[in-house]
Image (cartoon, rainbow, N blue to C red):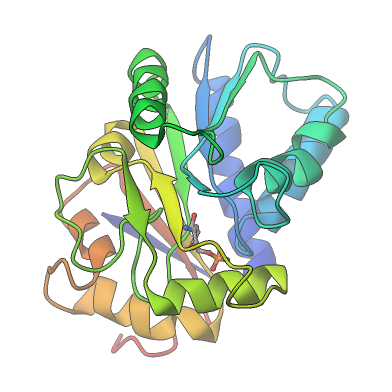
Length: 242
Ligand code: GLP
């Protein structure tokens, strides 16, 4: 994997946006995999500005998501709410396709299959990922096998705490499961970008960059993958030896 060090959240968002633009400009029918949470808010803003100022044209671009919480589509925490509030409702030109897992599907096994078929038909040029405080990617939590495929994951307590914090909800209101791309689908993307900001991610960054490769820290699965790029800001890199 490659690692790019940047100063702060804004520089991290700029760099991630550059990679998204490269992916969009580098393909006739680009497919861009996005994610939700605190980390991508700056990236979403940049995509909105880029599209609405006509710096980038997304009319041939397919956009899809890394994961979705199991719960109502309109929940404050849902990836659907996030994507429409932060991106899709703000774009003056719509992307060619928008795909999301349906976290409210009655038959979740069938939904996993449906989303996997969409992924198979839409190979990603870029997949953006955040990093959990426990090293998770999507909802590939500690202990998940490195060859996981799209599945319904149970969140750990650390992840539930992050969700409560991010969306200002109680433990009872917080979702505990997600439909997530597995490592297999994530790594099928031509380029995987993991971006990380803030001191609360420093322990995970240290484990991912300097610790042993282990399913205890899921993102260590990327250590030997040349098409994965980490973008890490100073606060998140603070515990690294060098
Ligand atoms: C969440 C989600 C991921 C997200 C990650 C980091 O639990 N499952 O999709 O990328 O954790 O979230 P944040 O950017 O808010 O730190």
